[in-house]
Length: 362
Image (cartoon, rainbow, N blue to C red; front, side, top):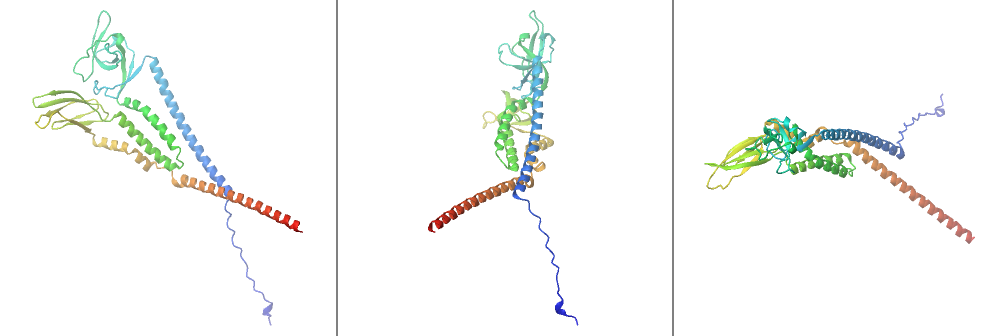
């Protein structure tokens, strides 16, 4: 017979797999610091490259301007519409010194009128005649109805226009406002810690800066009434566009005229017993594709947000939040250790006093 009592049934014990140990707080903190250092290094490299490129372009521009001026060149921004579409308001005009004897009818020159030597005009030569004292020059603005009431000599000339760039003068006038505003926005938003929020405020700040610049300079739409004459049916107003964009001018109870930048036009107003005088209004007059471009430019901040996007929340903002949580946890642990050390020292002093009292009693 088999002794069943002598049998022992044993069940093998399988040890549970050990859970992977989590990295210590110090390790996580060090990794977070490394990530922050790498991001800061990349940002500094990008900013450094951008600064060097911007500085290089600015230096080249300044050197070119100095060389141009050293060889007798000057630059001016047209402020009146007298040259019509050839040089509307906001045009940049570059001139070079010229000898009066080399001028021809049709040349565009910049000069100081003899009666107003502090003023500067840019008009077209309409007549060159010789005299005992040298060539005498007559000028006229392209849309002016009469020749200028002065005769120019060599001493009055600033130079002949060698380059005429419409609209660029508006940008040059806007540069000081844009630089001051850009610096303010960048410095103010540096105080914002969260990258996505910082970029959002910068987009908002730059949009407001452009709006303020356009409001101050008013480069897009402008209208000047040159003359207003009475007619048998009412009045006729001669107008010229001084903005960069095409407009439609409408006279109340009268006609309309479409004008491009620097273009001249006439609107007629019909006289009625109920209207004294006349009223003109202007509005943008763009082609469909121009409206598309116009709205696309206005929507650049929104398109930037949709296409390029803000800094991703999962990578940066959560890292910053994690780093802040680690910092708080680290501070809390240090505070707990300080509290435990104080409690230990207090307990040791209490035990020492108790021991001292016990010895005295004995």
